[in-house]
Length: 129
Image (cartoon, rainbow, N blue to C red):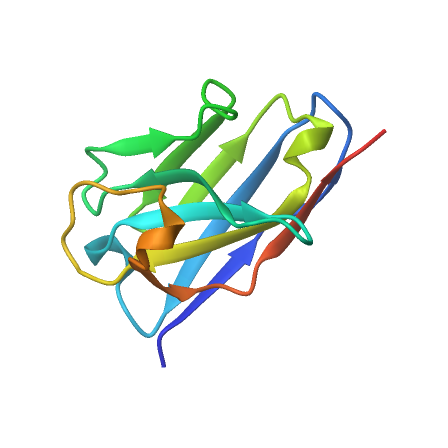
């Protein structure tokens, strides 16, 4: 069974940092482009960052550029999202997902294209003092 699991969420004060990890079971994550998305209750899911299967290409939402960094750890079979200088508006449930098609060097943050499957169950990030 193909499965993704997110970890690393939690409560942090404004200006703090968190590191999220996306771990795959049942398949090799390093064969797929991976995206990180977030969603608040009653709002649409939005793309945060993504990275191509070989790590040569990545994208960031304007709201997180310069604060978040996406990376691949091929030894651990994970894709991590380092989040620095966190703001209250970063509070959301964060999800990772893989591109349906393997070996995509480029990735998209457009979740409406239906390009990503499967998805993880999400991890809560709360930024509050």
